[in-house]
Length: 145
Image 1: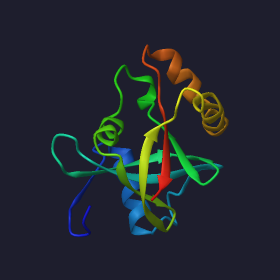
Image 2: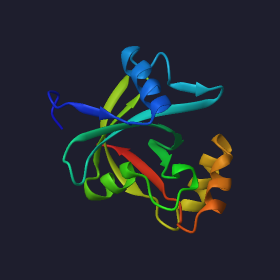
Image 3: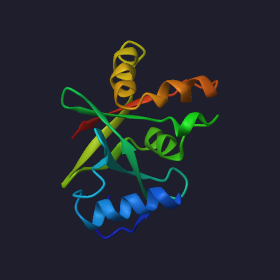
């Protein structure tokens, strides 16, 4: 990922607005999305287009790693950002004003129950999302490179 490449933000209206405020204020607005619920910006490379794509996601922590959930509100298919990082696991992350490169991976079956509990403590709706879909909703681990 080069600094000169254009980054395309989520086309979802409220998400695009959230990302714009986050970027314009260097995380001063948007990092705390709701009381006690924090978001990061995740930039992946499109698996088909090759373009950089950015979205905002609720996150948790597991030691030094950041955790995000590929829920898409319980939709039957994985979100595009998750499919992108499966194809190219090197991603860019912004947490507040801090920006860094990370390697993304799906939590292992042994790790997932603990990490899922961490994330549902932050956003309990994830449990409801899982009941809406037949797919197993992944927890993604973002390790700083």
